[in-house]
Image (cartoon, rainbow, N blue to C red; front, side, top):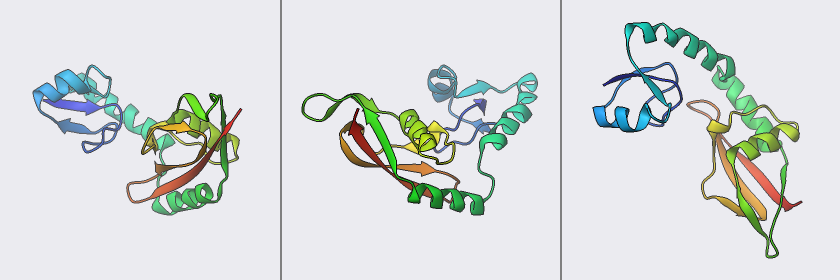
Length: 148
């Protein structure tokens, strides 16, 4: 099945890429979740707009990605959340929460889809999250979760 990706899918491609996947994977997973649209000649015209939107928010060069990584490494990110009596959070810290905390700490504007949290953050304390800035550059953010 030939599809046009609308979002990044790990191991498959970036938004705007035309990919060939197995029928079941495309029909049952990618298309219903909005990660891809079926390829047609009419839909092929949308590829340019998808790629333009991607290039507008993407870090273009490796040098720029390394510069942003340096900014993130030097940043002290503190996230205030509601907690229970024993230091456990109500819910978990999401990638969007981390992106907002980085922005409010004076860091660069990050896309929440590029932030990867290893284990769910459900306790107060210091935690790490990684950010895929470029295909060759990853950065690590230290997030300090405190009680609000």
